[in-house]
Picture 1 (cartoon, rainbow, N blue to C red):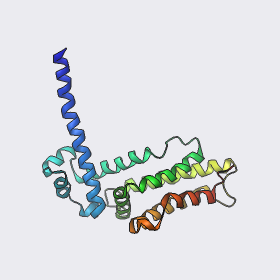
Picture 2: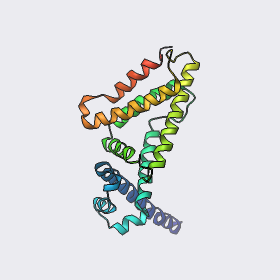
Picture 3: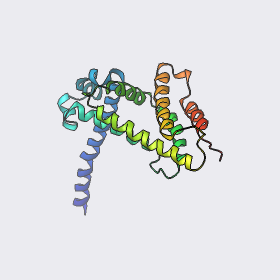
Picture 4: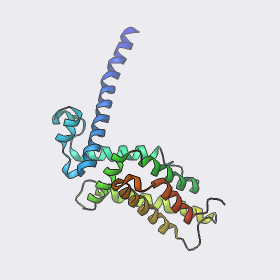
Amino acid sequence: MADRVAATTRKRGPYAKTKATRAAILDAALDVFARGGFRSGSIRDIATAVGMSEAGLLHHFPNKGALLAAVLELRDQRALDVVPKDDSDPLATLESLVGLARYNASVPGVVALYCTLSAEATDPGHPAHDYFVRRYAETVERLASAFDGCAAQGRLRNGTSPDSAARRTVALMDGLQVQWLLDPGSVDMAAEVRRFLHEVVDFTG
């Protein structure tokens, strides 16, 4: 029994260390990419921030593109903790955007990274181009479905198109993030998102 416990501990030890190292690398990459963008941020900068060699970092992520993909995946995972995946309640889906805006205000580095990368990724040759094309399409589709659900309940304001409302919501949230990064004290992102949603949807029933 003792041998079995010892063997299990040895297995868990390296795994836990590897997981912690990957997490530290992703945090450093997020910070480096947020400050300088993907093209300017280097593997060397990230490795230095973590206190390891470039070769050591590349043991965990084979190249810069793979590291970027992991950073974007991490961002999406954290966002999913705020925005529920269950789309059965359109009002809850839309209300969760207020929570997402509030969460974004607590992670300026993540917001800066997103804004920088989304602008850089308009170049079809950028490693994150396909990610952002897919993400915008999926986000607009999901929100349009939520607004369509509101319309079916008689909650969508007259003259409002679900697709247009979805695109305006995305544009609003992205634009607010830029304004907030430039001058954090000038805008309350969560309040503005809530105000817009209540202008196009009747939440009172």
